[in-house]
Length: 344
Image (cartoon, rainbow, N blue to C red; front, top):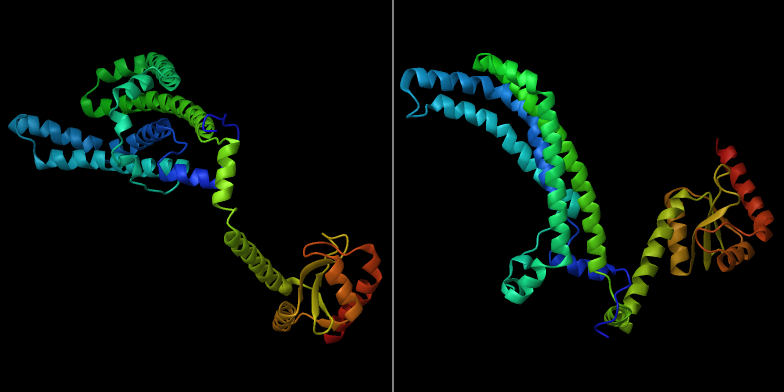
């Protein structure tokens, strides 16, 4: 049974267990590409904010005291350049990770695992299919990014050569812009590759957590197989249904009653419904709650025992009434509409 082929999609419980173990569909490439793009997009702002000040302080330091000791001005100006870059990288890392796996922390992956230091297991992982795929992706990514960076630098060669002839403060802007173009194109390509890698990681993750039919049966026995649990689930579902029925009474046009035993709330919207629809129904205690809710929201209550019993027996909540009850319901709704016109 343990070697049975895993062909079934993982259940929510299986997914939750995998998540607790730190097994999620996640691509580190997404984080790397997003942080790189954030740094590239923030670089012009950082350079405008503190770049010129840093160069001026550095030149003044060289003229006055040499490079043996850095002044406070250099440290402050460097911090002004680095601060927005570090903030952008930190926030981007949080957002990129949250978009992939949500906000979740587990210490289980940090617990000691002898399989991680097992040389046999390590050798198998080194020459596994996953390792081959990761190596192929790394080579492909490096080749594409190198090619894009090289082509972009070729297009910016003239501007970089011209900037090298200018004084440093004046050369800062064109050099920064050239680096910005290189970084922007490399980052865009990296992000596309990262998205493709994320899709692959999701596919591989779904394949990894698949379950066999035997595992599905065992999980069903552990959860649904418990009679007490089944009763509790059924009771909870019934309670939710009752609460929903009572809550929907406020949207009803009329409540038809027995007048004590049954209560059925009807709603009719000519624009969206072919026939009046039952939005709530109840018997005994629930019928009493429906009547109380109708009084609370000023929904008309019309006693009609035969119609109330028929609606309760033939129509479920959310269904439209059958054609056999059209005439009786139409008379009740006409009566309600006349009451409303009379109040106006």
